[in-house]
Length: 258
Image (cartoon, rainbow, N blue to C red; front, side, top):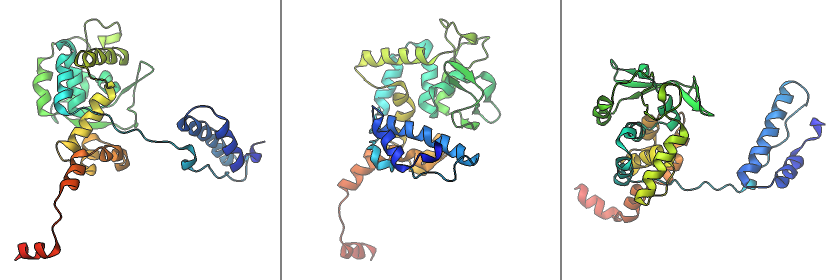
């Protein structure tokens, strides 16, 4: 019975699930979600205590990213027909699915910005972004000549390719990954499409441009500053500056002040 599920039951369930700590947590979270609904429906009097996160021993992997020169080298290795969508991903901190679903009508020339309204799920276009919010993204000046050089098409999509069999000749995740992986292999790079584009650009903004976490949050339209925590931990430029910074005594500071 549902009311018999308690803290120890959830612990036993987590221990019985094979796989990583993340897998165990996902299973327990699914059951917890069902219990939360049962409580709302008054099927159980109260929610059991959830297992502590530390019990799952989940370790967040370090952010893998490319500095600007290596990222740009990969994009320049890609055949020119396909380069525009990758430059868009580099300059605008968006997800590949959002770029795939971007339509010409989503560019507002008056505001000079893209309005991210759609995404891709299971290779199908959906009328929402991952967060569910429409996001206005300024067109970066470096991208404008690239956008103007794109050949005109009858497709409603911003980015297309001649060999596509999808409606409107848009890209798919599979095709983008294949193109990216082939370019990486040619240069000896080993990094996924998402890490090589959005994650790399975010890391570059902190390491190379010196953006703060709050500035990065605004640039990438993250809903919460917590979303930038992983990039902050990978901020080697800041760590290097702190480690190499000379220690100045209080007396020296006073002398300089005079």
